[in-house]
Image (cartoon, rainbow, N blue to C red; front, side, top):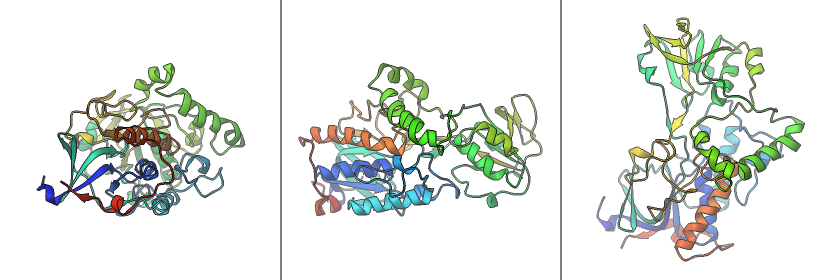
Amino acid sequence: MNDARDREHFDTLVIGGGQAGLAAGYHLARRGLDFVILDASERVGDVWRSRWDSLRLFTPAAYDGLPGMPFPSPGHYFPTKDEFADFLEGYAEHFRLPVRSGVRVDELTRRGDVFLVGAGDRRYEADNVIVALGSYQEPKEPDFAAALHPSLTTLHSFDYRAPSQLQPGPTLLVGAGNSGAEIAVELARERRVILAGRDTGELPFRPRSTAARFLWLPLVLRILFRKVLSIRTPIGRARRPALVGRGGPLIRVKKRDLAAAGVERVGRVTGVREGMPVVDDGRVLDEVRNVIFCTGFETGFESWIRLPVHGGVHDHEPRHQGGIVSDQPGLYFLGLHFLRSLASGMIQGVGDDAAFVVDHLARRQGRGPGGGARVGARGMAGRPAA
């Protein structure tokens, strides 16, 4: 780290300017706390803009708002990924949140009671740090990916945008969760598609249906995900280890939709033979010309958080209690899957978690709940480190 005179000091530093980081900023601003939000993207919302072109949110607009601002569409409308990205950008502007874009944090350590944050040649100090990056940071590919024949076009769903990226011919999607199913249906309009992976199950309703709008979505999203499957309930605590790090059921695309689109289902890909993928029944998929890995993500925290917080319920989850790291006072996490409830990793859940975390942080700072405070010049500029 550089000399202290080259560092800015903030009471609180938020890492990540997505929905979780902005929700934290909203609550920090209401309490008049000194803070800054660092975001690696060039614009607020760019993480969403970079997803595949046809993506729409899995939840309707009624569940896509953030604290203090509902999503500006009819409640039953399913926003596109670009519409939600623009909403995040407008949210940050409306509440004058101090977001510094294009700042990628690459180191988090601490010295005594002060956290030290590095971002390229920039250096920061903070009494508190909220890591609001979520569980889906580093694309994860299976070990056999490197052994596939170089003539195949291979990419992760993180890098997929449109069918034009692929060469002509059959396409294999590895991973049969929501991303794999959605991309499979899109590609099946113009080519043969094979979808490999375990059966993840599916919701017993269609999110766009009238029954879902008035019965199923309120029941599942507002009650089951937020109140029942929560660390505050015995059933939630019992189910959490099995749910953390595991993909959920199909939401929008159903198994019968895959069949109707002509998508061929096969079992798990277990390896490679002469450069071509092999499924668990021994069949070699030698007709495949493209492979898209829809195999999830890792947090990537181990590469830059140089504090003893790693090794939670799963190897790549940090240790925390509802987002609070008790043995690293002042360190918090937001946006992780099942942080405090099954809704935590969803847009509708980050507001509750952010309020909880910021309330703990404010009390630690000797500041109780407040209301109506704005982010001032100090929050925007920070102050030199002592």
